[in-house]
Image (cartoon, rainbow over all chains, first blue to last red; front, side, top):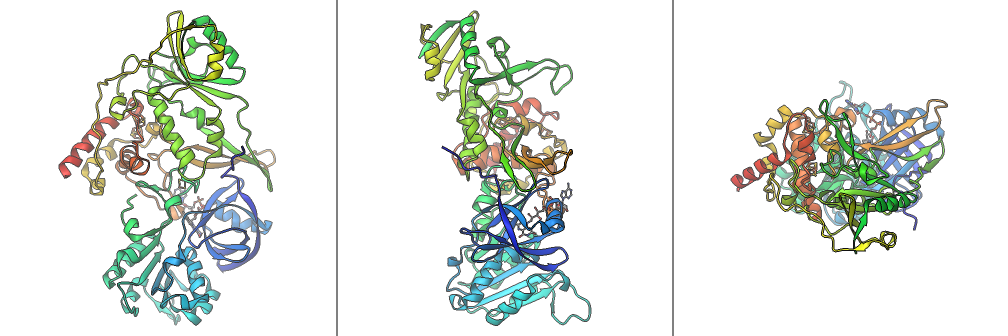
Length: 265
Length: 333
Ligand SMILES: Cc1cc2nc3c(=O)[nH]c(=O)nc-3n(C[C@H](O)[C@H](O)[C@H](O)COP(=O)(O)OP(=O)(O)OC[C@H]3O[C@@H](n4cnc5c(N)ncnc54)[C@H](O)[C@@H]3O)c2cc1C
Ligand code: SF4
Ligand code: SF4
Ligand code: FES
């Protein structure tokens, strides 16, 4: 009997590169198989190592990976991607189950690159607006220069209620400013006790946003979050992502808040 | 089947088995210990029973036979990857009851928690386990408290008694080799008492994660990770790529043992890390060993070998910590 080697990556072609900022690009990669928003791949670069990267878009035979250049592996990807392929293994993790949100009123709050893992959800409801009983996308970026997925925002604005804000900007900026949390109280929600809140971003942003949503009357069991931790395997072996009895790579990274709130590093 | 056989004959059988199996057992390495002028007992290859250290506890466990300290997963060139070959021979491992229980913990993580680990499985499937008895408890052992002092789960039990060897075999190839030996009832030596006794905490409430109790460990622990490296149930690793400098194009990916006490274990991009405080790292390890693992898999992870207590340069006692924690949990209730 041959056992499948879960660590051997496969070769995936880069079919397009979308440049958002100097340090954030989306790589459209060939991939055939099931995958959900919120799942992730280990992007593998021989000689440099691996980095877990969320699926930021799902095409017919492709997945999008939006990568931020921050270190050893990601620097090398940016500098040498002209090689026109990367190695991948995955997808890993549970991902978001869109069925949980269908027919409901949805408020999705994302901070910065936190938009990547939930972008597939936004894409879905933008294409199928009748499947939600109202959809608000609230996204915060550090500055106008950090805005990701600019073209997608134009599309989303047609069908969804989109609020985009930046922490700080020069005087000439005409868009919204301030933290996402400042906008929550004014978002019209028809029936808050049944509305779904999805929150993904840096740890501090998630904490403050959840507090604000609870204050607004959202119920804990209707809130969903996605967690990021150091990961060396993605398959429950290396231990780095473990919190309490939970392996983020296996049981997460997506959690209902009733479970997620008990995770303590 | 139980047997009695002459020591020389048993060594001849081992010599024969070593054509198809590498035999690993605890051996004494003189002057190689953690503390100056002290020997270390760790696993190595043997070809004669006289090389095995039966009288003392090994400082390191058998786990490196199945989870090498550094294991090459595959070799690569720019566009190709090739899985590293498995060891040509199978393995025979001599180990005590507690370590056989530890084997189950390794199995759970590497075979059941998520995808099957093909590297572990190919070694595991090709390994036979020979139990060494314990006539007395060693310092810091608390196997009785952890229920790991006895086992039925061995391929063979072997005891050297002067010039004779007593065996209990559940392994056909060994039974065949022992065909000429005298049949004898052999009951393995198990301890039923330890000096160190631990009381395990009932479900530890999260409020105790921040108890001042952990601060003492924060002040003493130097984050050396030795307690993790000697532990037969610690399973964590980190990935490492390296390339051969002669042409820069070829290299290999390895996994190497990792420790949750050592800096960098939780480091993420942007310099963010969790559990910067060493007391919180102790809390994380202790909770894994006697709380979290059980919640997930039904048994405690720690098997009570006491090696972490033996090795700690700061004299931090794990068993003591569990007892204090249990007392705190009771107070809390
Ligand atoms: C489930 C999941 C999903 C993710 N999704 C995405 C995604 O969609 N897009 C994305 O861009 N990222 C994502 N990430 C994060 C991404 O995995 C990391 O940014 C990536 O692993 C960085 O790898 P690297 O080798 O480039 O950086 P590394 O070289 O490993 O390090 C990056 C940074 O870490 C810090 N660092 C490393 N070592 C040290 C040290 N010793 N001391 C101090 N600081 C140190 C430094 O700031 C360094 O610049 C995700 C992570 C997870 C767990
Ligand atoms: S935690 Fe300590 S006593 Fe328990 S199995 Fe590991 S080394 Fe042995
Ligand atoms: S508890 Fe002791 S052995 Fe473990 S890391 Fe701290 S100092 Fe080292
Ligand atoms: S990433 Fe290795 S156990 Fe989760």
